[in-house]
Length: 133
View (cartoon, rainbow, N blue to C red):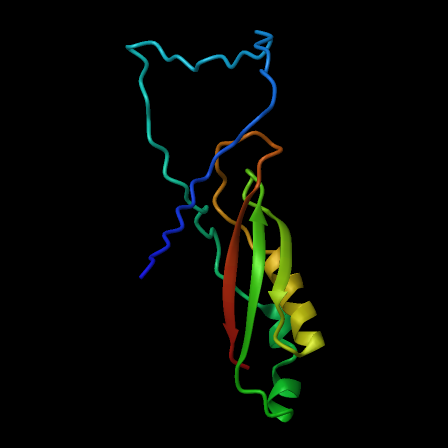
C-alpha cells in the first residue's frame, strides 16, 4: 500500500539577483521620550436644538390618509466645525418621495454643538429616523 503526501509550501523564486540600489528609504517616526501622548476618542457633536421635522409635519394628514402610520429613514449627516449641517443624504429612503424630501430638508436645518477643528473638517455619522405622522 502506498500513501502519497502532498506538501504545499508557498515560496517565491527569481532567476536573478535583485540589486540593492539604496535609494529606498523609509524614515522612522521617532517621538521624544518626554512627548505627551493623548488618546482621542471619536465623538459626534451633541445636538444643540430639538430635532424637529416641520416640513414632514405638514404632510401628516396626507400620510395618515394614505394609511402610513410609521416611516423609517436612514440618513448620512455631516456637520461642519461651526455646528451646521453641511450634508444630509438619504441612505435608505422611506419610500414616500414627498416625505423623503421633507426629512432631508428638515435635517439639513438642524444645528449641533460647535467643535474645534479646521474649517475643512467635517464629522459624518449615520442617523436612523422613525417618523410617526
